[in-house]
Length: 152
Length: 190
Image 1: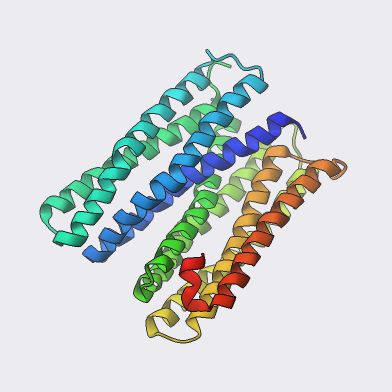
Image 2 (image 1 turned 45 degrees about the horizontal axis):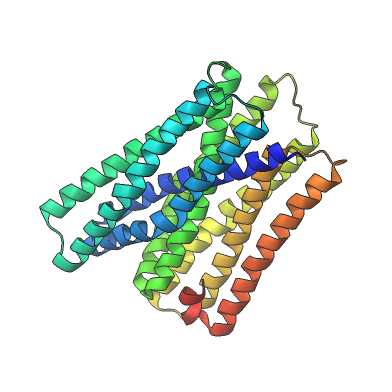
C-alpha cells in the first residue's frame, strides 16, 4: 500500500461524506416539505444548521487538503485542468454553503419554529433548497472532472 | 470521454450517494434522538424506509451493475482479482443486510416508537448498532476499491481490517454505554 493510495482513500471517503450526505439531506428535506408539517420543516432546518458546520465543513476541508497532498504526492501538475477546475468548484460550493446557506437555513428553521409557517418563510426555504441543489450539481460536475480528468 | 470513464463516473457517483447517504441517515438519527421527541424518531423511521427503498437500494444495485460493467470493459481487471472478490463479498453482505433486515426493521421500529411500545427503545439501539456496523462495512469496501489489495499483500489487508475492527469496536462500545444508560438516554449518548 502506497501513501498515494491512503490519501486517495481519505480524499474519496471525505467526498462521499460531503456529497452523498448532501444528496440524502435533500431527500429528507423533500420528505419534510411533503409532510406539510411546519414543525418537521423547522426541525429539518435546524438539523441542517447543526450538520453543516459539524459534518459538511470538516469533510470539505479534508477533501481540499487531501486533494492538495495527492497533487504533490502523485507529481501532478497544478495547472492540470481537472485540478484547477476541482479547486474552483470546491471554492464556489464551500463558500456559498458554509458562509451563507447553512446559516440562512438555520435562521429560516428558527423563524418557522417561533413565528409559525408563512408564505414568506416558505418562499425563502424554497430558494435556499434550490440553491443547495445547484451546489450539489456543481459537486457532481467536480466528481465528473476528477474521474474523467480531461486534458490528461 | 470513453465508455469506461462514463461507467467509472456512474459507479463513483452511485457509491457516493449510497455510502454518504447512509452516513447522513446516522446523523439525522442522532439529531432525532437528541430531541427526545419520540414522534420525531417515528417519522425518521418511516423516512429511512422510504429513502432505503427509493434511493439506497437502486443506488447500490446500479453501483454493482456499473462495477460489473467496468470489469467487463476493462483490459486490466478481471473477476478473479483479489480486491474484486473481496468487494463482491462485502457488497453481497451489506446489500442483503439492508434489503432483508435494516430497511424493514427501521419501519417496524418507527411504528413501535409511535405506539409508545416499551420494546421500541432496545430495538432502536440494536437497529442503530447494526446500521452503523453496516456503514463500517461500506467504508471497508471503499478502502478495498481504492487500495485494491491482493491476498498476498498482507499489510494492506491487515490495515483495512484493523481500521474496520477499531471502528466496529467503537460502535459496539457506544451501544453498550447506551444500553447501560437505558434506551431513554440513548439520544444523549449517541
